[in-house]
Image 1 (tube, rainbow, N blue to C red):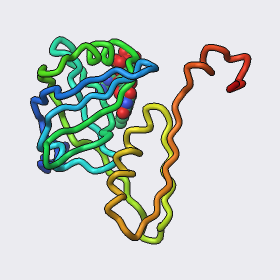
Image 2 (image 1 turned 135 degrees about the vertical axis):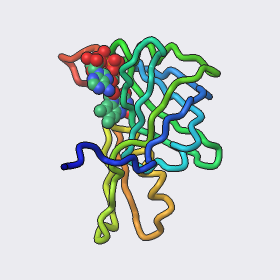
Image 3 (image 1 turned 180 degrees about the vertical axis):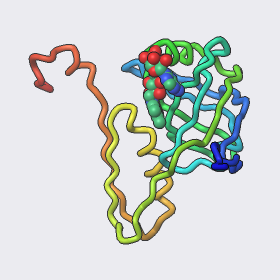
Length: 165
Ligand SMILES: Cc1cc2nc3c(=O)[nH]c(=O)nc-3n(C[C@H](O)[C@H](O)[C@H](O)COP(=O)(O)OP(=O)(O)OC[C@H]3O[C@@H](n4cnc5c(N)ncnc54)[C@H](O)[C@@H]3O)c2cc1C
């Protein structure tokens, strides 16, 4: 009989993650740091976690991992408050516990013949690039260039005029 599910490979952890820091930035963006030592130790750039935004909201929301500290045991995310889930997540306070599943997904790979990788990230595509850029610092054989872009509140207010004056 054909196997219908993959065996648990022990690479994804379910952790009760304590909120260590949660700060709001312009543009409805938030940086969330949680204690999740198993995820912090195992995560690689390009991976994400599934976060329970609120105990009363069963469907988790996926967020890319922006930064980890394996020694200190924390994981950091950058997210935009968008809909129901991220609105609830934005209310979580330091000291609260949220359920986290991670790390999930296939990490980035740098091909052996690449020496000058170019990292491009925009908006909520920025977090995995930050993780990758910090990870590549340890690679003396690589000289990465990173370009990150985010929407400008001034440009958004006046779509008819894109002047930066
Ligand atoms: C791999 C991955 C990485 C991401 N990384 C980031 C990031 O780093 N930062 C960031 O700001 N955003 C990221 N996003 C987008 C983020 O997950 C969405 O903005 C968020 O799910 C929106 O949820 P919401 O409830 O606030 O919005 P809503 O608009 O209310 O929800 C979006 C819709 O998707 C449905 N939905 C939500 N979660 C799931 C799920 N897990 N499975 C199926 N349906 C679902 C909701 O029910 C709703 O219908 C990522 C998405 C993916 C897939």
